[in-house]
Image (cartoon, rainbow, N blue to C red; front, side, top):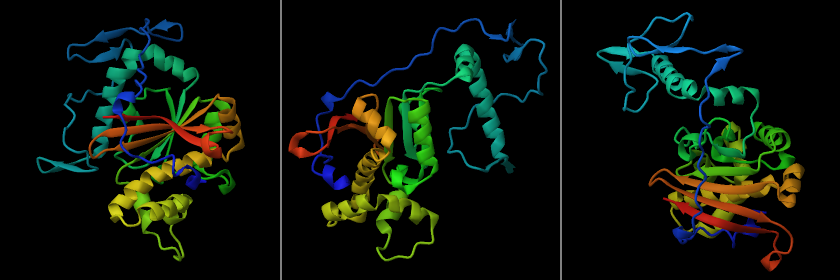
Length: 301
């Protein structure tokens, strides 16, 4: 199916002035917090920590600033190997103090229900965190991450991605599905390195083979380029292949046809920190007799 879009989905440079303004998300004004019917009295102690009056406090560990060095599972400091969970504990307590407590009403509302507008399908790569890159706040995006941000076709059967799609579309009724690919994707490199006749006994190879059509179209369109450039082409081509695979799910195709669900592709280049975004159009009678087209291309830089 991806070949139907190949002529429409070239990724040549375009006028960035046509970029759409991205949505901004704001918290509601904070109301006096309560737990049940009891007011939550926050008081500041002499050492500038917030605590709940009457609660049992844990032993205080002197506050420290988060390290600006790359986070490692173990890090030596003054000859000692630090427990990585000490860093995570500090980050969690900072989140609770700076985010949760200051927006307690919002978190209490989220504890009752979620109604995200977006479902995001992103890569499991540690360098690509959708909430960090796109600023999603809790409750705004239902997210699933897998190797190479692939969407298997409906006929593939059960997977964590298809289960997440079913819940997001049929239960949460999200209005947008965004597939986010990225530069230097290891999953795509594995796909492009596969031998056509190889007998795969690898979970990774079995999974990335979902993108074989993107690999074939890349070989046809960019086979004369370097391996790095072929991978870059395939990173984007596989997003379009996954967008088309979304339409093999009957309940997704139905909502897209009705106009209650939109499908989008995104590409994050973490080398120069840019983000490309586009929307898939699906309807009968498009130019050239195709049912697929691309609109609303934008480059955020």
